[in-house]
Length: 104
Image (cartoon, rainbow, N blue to C red; front, side, top):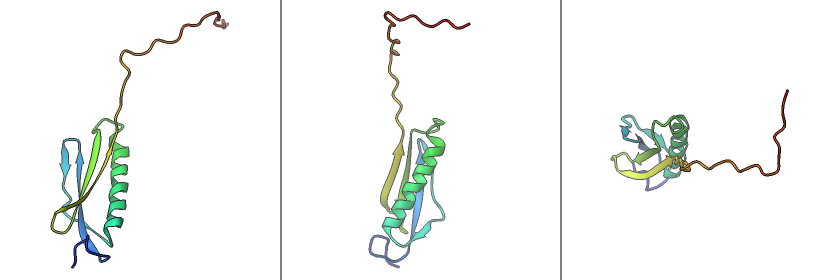
């Protein structure tokens, strides 16, 4: 079987996942008809993992290393989230010449 980079035939690829410091190797692999298809699937998988883990703060970056049947990396997909707080927090604007309405 030719490698995934050499043409349009099916080849086994492995999606090893890094979530921050955590590493989850793919021991089973998947078959795709081309590297382009594997890339789209890796991007979709990284986005889904990111959607589940990034907002909770489990990790700030999700990386999927796509490896060929020889376990050689052929591409990497990374999704990340960065949060920047303004410090110190801004003060609310002063209300000049306006009275706040009184509620009963």
